[in-house]
Length: 506
Image (cartoon, rainbow, N blue to C red; front, top):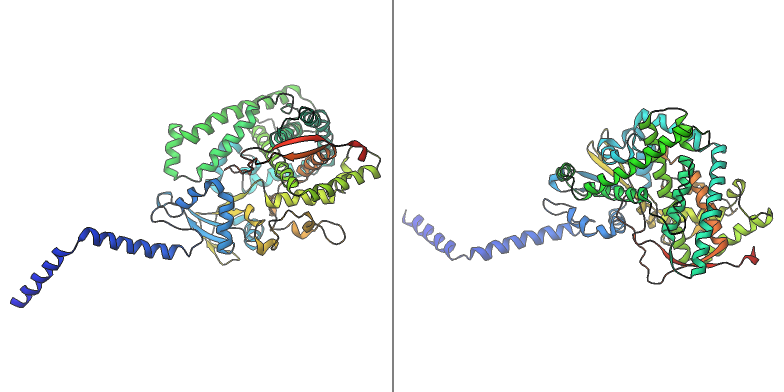
């Protein structure tokens, strides 16, 4: 008994002498060092409770570059978890094997899903880009028939050519005479907005005109897309509070949607009043249904697709040309050769398929700068991807198109080089194998963009006209950076100086 008391007394004495604050700090540091040592081996660090949210926020200003680094370190596919309170689990991938399985082989198991549809519901409604299942298939068939109609393509070539000759060329010529720098990115977005409005609505809104009039619709779309991107950064509970109180990005979205709804409603009503028989998409759709909501959703889905894809793609295309003058020279030679052989001053529809090198250069620009940098999918049933990763219902799959084009194990050691030649075979024809699941700038599988060929028509006509008539030089020290959005657009525009090209060479 005395021995036990003696031992207990000594233990109490030892405990009393222990510097507990220092001991607790030491223990905490031990666990932190152990955690850090374990986490530094992972491609993306996962914090207690917050998980991958801190590194995500820290890299928000360079989101796509960071995701590319993470996926490269992870071998192309990685599971990540949002903060505990969000209850969100993601699988990110850029592996072409997984992409083929998700977008084609097991297509029905990976719909957009309710959560993704909800995030875009205010903007896209029940349009083709926000649907799944039979409703999507029905709209897809209608759109596919119209977009692949030669009559519609001829209509696009004619109206796009008119906008180039009457608006685009005069604006750039005016800039050349003034000697002042101009935002080429803004010019191209305005050009594609007018061209797309004409193709979709049958009306040119002349946003590309002297003085660059404000286009409330375009700004509103940018604001909505930015707000939607932020919805994936916040816990669901925070989103609900922000929506209910109409605060921050949710207020930005709500205000912008008022502008968009008014614009689209006005255009739908005008189309009904005029009852003109033209080849624009809204007229064609109005012939199948008079439902205003259906027409609203169709109009806004196609307007967004046309405006954002072609305009932004050409912005990145011309920026890359400024860094690779040899590519510009070869495109110019190809265009001139076709025009001279046919004794024409302007390209026609039949000429466009002959512009192989220009097509390759546009594809190469889209490989490095896909305008929709990532896509999202839900999961219906548990499945094992070709990479071996298991996905379960509730998981959000994010396939990162931006990373696909920048992986050495997919495109080779020169993947960061702007090299149109990689798209052309030894016989001078386009390589069809590149239009697979390692190139998803226009999506892939059953949901491949229906407007892909129309986009190439617009881009080829505009790019050829600009290069034939002008020399462009990007302003020195002008920062060219992507904006954090669901669209890969330029944050600071593309400031260039324009010089008229001598026409004696044509």
